[in-house]
Amino acid sequence: MNTSFFVSLDKKALYHNIEYLREYKQKELLPVLKANAYGHDILLIAKALYDYDVKVWAVARYSEAVSICEYFKTLSIDDFKILIFESLIDDYSLLEKYPQICPTLNSIKDLKNALANNISIDRLSMKIDFVFGRNGIKYEEVDELKNLIKYNSLKFLSIFSHLFSSSYTDGLEIIKKFTDLVNMLGRNNFEMIHLQNAAGIYNYDVDIVTHIRTGMLTYGLQEAGFYDLDMKPVFTGLIGYVDSVRYVNELDYVAYQELSSIDPGTKKIAKIKIGYGDGFSKANNKTTCLIKKKEYVISQVTMDNTFIEVDDRVNVGDEVHLYHRPNEIKTKTGFSMLELLIAISPLRVKRIFKGEEN
Image (cartoon, one colour):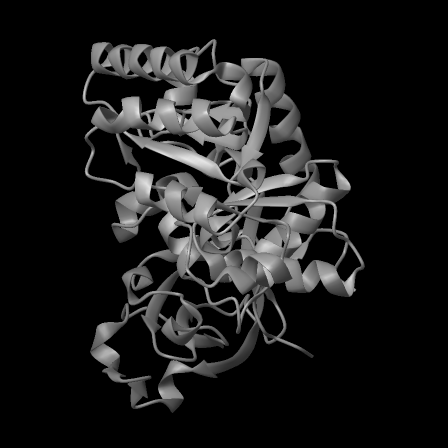
């Protein structure tokens, strides 16, 4: 049998989160698919969103957008848009080849280059930097920006910024600045207006925005310091099967460790076909997995395999669940579930929606 591991995903949970967040904030969503859709598989999630009539997404890199475009080309689908947080690049042929790609203007220079090269402004977004040291047009340059927009009668796909603050009142000040700025530049000059990240969605209502930019919340991942009981995790497990079982008394070592490294009462060692080469980190050493509804200690993670301390209940072919307690994982490994999911290799570990295994 195939004992390889796969990431199990729940499409119904994805759709639930979309509807819940729409209802909760009374805004449309701009789902973020960067970092392989936060570890969930960028192509799988993009297609699921498209099928749910959500056809505008955001990514961080051009390479991510190109991979989606190429995949959708094989499906003869072209009615979608991908906002890229990266700046407009000099290779304008890429924009001609992929009309769905919508770059960001992160400087006045970007805007002037777009105008000089006859790039359609209505496919571009504009990011404003409120002195965070991130990308974006500097707040003190808005007067020049206003003049360029007015003189050239410009209409953009979107305007956005990053709502980060060390205190609640600081966040309110950023919202006021952003609102005043959008009104000054002309609210009707932007098809989409978005500001909030996950914490901003929970902390604030922002009247001027048309969309909420949902990254981890799309996937039901919980923002640090918040816990929303109405969200449903799209990730339902890292699942595989026991590949082999050996009695401890037949062994001199467990992988690269002496037998003294395991519990003295351990009778058997089970091997599973996943390791740090698959993105299953050594930080998982001495955590637990689930086999037949019982927890067993993970003895050692190697590059291609992981070894588990088991008993006589466990046999070859038994189903193994890793990360079965996602809300406790940071305490045990030092990494959040988000960080661990992103680390899982897209090449070696498939993502599969439940019910669509074949």
